[in-house]
Image 1 (cartoon, rainbow, N blue to C red):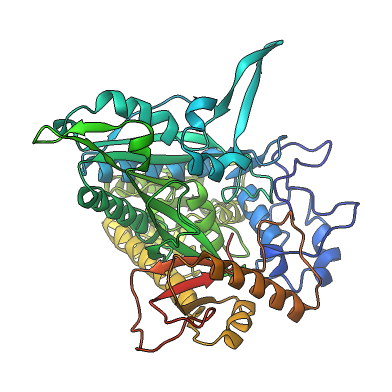
Image 2 (spheres, rainbow, N blue to C red):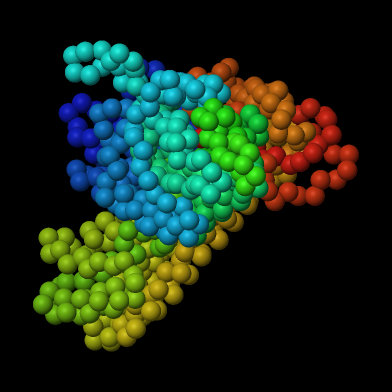
Length: 555
């Protein structure tokens, strides 16, 4: 199911993607496959619920992929574009990204990381200087070959990542140990010409990110930076997005191309039963330093090669948040990252005129803003209260404050919580302070609920016979492993799990164009390792196990 296709002919780009195609489609994979009830609901769902399309046409547990598309379009986060895999980030989603930027900038500046900006383009010679690195990105690189009517003398690549763009400058700037550490970050766009199942936020040909790049005198100092960056990524997910993550090391097979070691935070999407890589922080070792001559004189006057790190977080974060918390009404936003944390809706009627409601509501708004709450008064007269309720629920605003005639009489307001539907009457005196406490409670409750769901799908398995059945139950599987360097056994598990999964479903094969395979892959070697009894064998090779590794089907 390709959510990245252009909208149907004659429709504007804000419309949903096509819900059916005339040519025969392969069996659904990934998110779409997690929808056993989708077929029987086909007729119901292809019919419009009215010309205004105010309600979601798909349910989360019926067709996860189409539900996701409905949510991000109707909540005004995304509009589709006429180039597959490219999307318009509307103000509602971009504000979420801006809030993350503000939070993240403050954190990295406390670590003496400075923001900079480097060019979008990279020459072919520079891109291909590090062999393993370019091989890892080669299938995704977009090339500029023409200028106007003429061919360029040499093709120029659009950055898939910025190591080869930044590091020649690092070589020029770093001469002495006094120039280290050098810690830079840039907020930019990146182009990776993905050809499999483009999906808004999760897998797109252009996306936004921050990428940090640092240089250090030794491994120890660089490793501190790696872990500091990963800790920030964990906090972005858990403190801002209320999404639990599992931090750990990538195996040799899954690490960053050309790097020394990769750390990651891995999230879980209950609706599809898949894991998703949340963000990564890499210790690049000295490999790029040798390639780009990033050397310095140490305190003894000897020439040394710098140790480097790179780390990145993308707009994928937004998609993960939507998938984890959204429901059949629309978005459900954690207060910490919501563009609006509260919206005030006056209930205008014969008993309450606009001129009477407005001063009361504006007083509430002033109190909320004074308490540091992102709030808005929806005083539009062309829409009735019911329409406004639906609108702001779809957009996931954490709290709705309703003001009717009885509320004004009692000097109170009705507070309605988006994530669980709770309704409570609160006095307007010091409402801002009380609501801030309520928002904190909502944030914590959303994280606790997501963690409980994730943990219920996290299992330990020590025998192969239990491995694929647990994948089929949409579980993440923790198994004993003979070590991250055994790439051959990783390939064996991937191929064997695909074969057994397809056999259990009565299917002969899966569409190679599909990015969400039924095969398992290693997600990480978790930092938090359960006890490994002596004599425990690797689940695949039968060799002595040296660690536990986390597997799952992944985006």
